[in-house]
Each structure stands twice: as C-alpha cells, then as structure tokens.
Length: 199
Image (tube, rainbow, N blue to C red):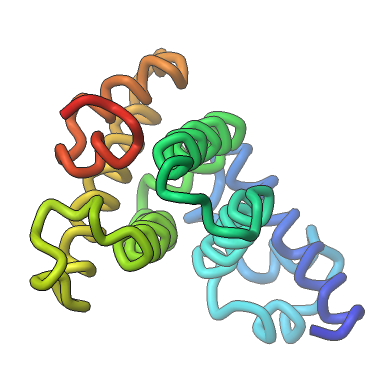
C-alpha cells in the first residue's frame, strides 16, 4: 500500500476504533466516520464497504500485530505448549485492553462480521499448529486431511470466541487469568494437551 493510502487507512481505522470504544457503531454513518478521520467518503469506500467492515479490518490489523510480536520461527515441539499458552494469554489481554471496542463490535448489527474476523484469526492459527505439529491432533495423523484440520480448528476457535463474548457481556468481567482458566477447562482435550495442560 502506498504511503498516502496507508495514512488514510490508519486515520479511518483509528476513527472507527474510537467510535466503537465509545459504544457507537451501528448508528455511525460513513459520512460521520469519514469526517472524523478527515478523509472523503470516496476515500472511505476505497478501504471498506461499510463501517462494520472497516472495524473488522481494524481488528484484523490489531490481531495480526499480536502474531507479529512472536518469534517468526516455529517453536520446537518441546517449546510448543509454552508458545501456544503464551499466545492464548496475549489474545485475552489484547481483548481486555480493547474490551469496550469488542463489546460494541460483538453486539448489534456488527456482531457477525467481527465474530468472523476473530474466529477466522483463531482458526487459521490453529490450522497451522495442527499441520505443523500433527501429533497434537486428537485423531491419527493418517486421518488428518484438510477437512479434519479445518473442522478441529473451527470447533476450538468458535468455542473460544463464544466464551470471549460471554466474558465481555458480563457486568463485571472476570480477570484475564480467571477467564483463561475457565476457557481451558472447557477446551477440547487435544487443545489442553497442546498448550501444556493435563487432559
């Protein structure tokens, strides 16, 4: 992306996150958001087709930053549990830091696209883990084809996102470590083993 386009995108994503943080999303028009970002409507539509899509893009960028923070090399099998466990904690802390944004995003008309963004992020990362470390899968390696990898990853990702939604909807959300412990207790046994817990 050229620098000018990147600056516009940055202004737009900053503005949409500010609106979501303030509890506003479904009632924000493209015109209002473009004004807040100091760009034209035409510029807005070069980056997204709706306010909700722009928020999904902004959150996908934030999630990509989480992955970028980790070592680019794959961990050894011995290191995998610690890496996956640390990744879970980073994700939950990220969501806690942006709780007002995610709370707004996962409510109302905006819920489905944002839920897809979060679930897709988790599912893609779980699929990589299952492909690179097939011994963590709950089925024999010779049965681990693309479809079974996708099913296992989708199941774990969707359950995690559902748990996150419930956590964020509570009047007084629990601390990250408590939520992490509860999610791990309800996670599929294969994932608990993969992240270094006892199944």
